Length: 307
Ligand code: 13P
Image (cartoon, rainbow, N blue to C red; front, side, top):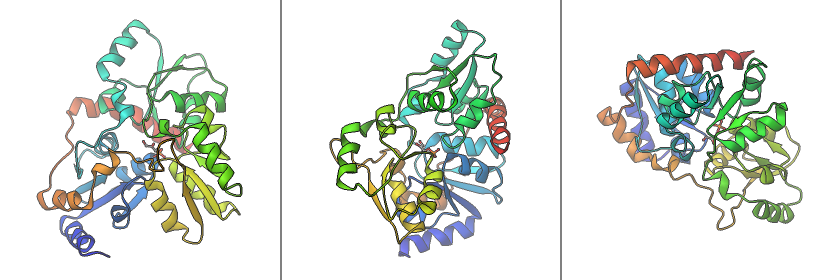
């Protein structure tokens, strides 16, 4: 434990804060969080969080989701500018105009979108439950899936259900290519490849398992293999190495480097997290009407996901 981590834990106790961190956060943040998980696990954890304050270490849409499911809490973030290329690809006004021109669509929104987009959606999903959610949409309805066309394509492959796809992507997962993954597979032929569904179809086709970050933990734990090639944001390696120190986790390389880092996730630092608890700021604030409208599709997801 570093002195800064000790300072952080002192402040966390003083403020009665619950610290929620995504699997992509820096190692020093994951080590002091109350809960580390994927977007779905974090939504449930936010819903049942007790105390006055949630310090959310992830990106902005995730902290917004925490606020929507538990609006009485003060939700802090280390850095409010930690955004998401997927959320940016689908502005609410553009979606509203599209829906006006294409009435009757059933909108399934990946959680990686703004609260204003969630407010226009019928149901939300995460990478951990997308297949299950889409299977529960009434068959007679045409689905618009947004904003990630790769996740949408994967869900179509899994369910056989045709959907309209929004043209968004995650810039980090787009950096992995079939050539870069093929190369690393040849270097480590014994290691299964585990990839996130935000990767392109060509990359997914080279994977032994495609799943959410939380399911990656279970897959690697239950597999008899000793080493794994992990094709997602590099923060995931910290989580896997902490949980399974006896196994070897190899970062899936991109064409240019072996980094796979999300610049937004990495905006959160432990220093900024300490300052946030000291100042009780910056806070995630949302208009009451957005909270009201965005809550229904999120709660629908949480309910459908338990089925
Ligand atoms: P999950 O949290 O569902 O694994 O998704 C990871 C991700 O890419 C978030 O942007």
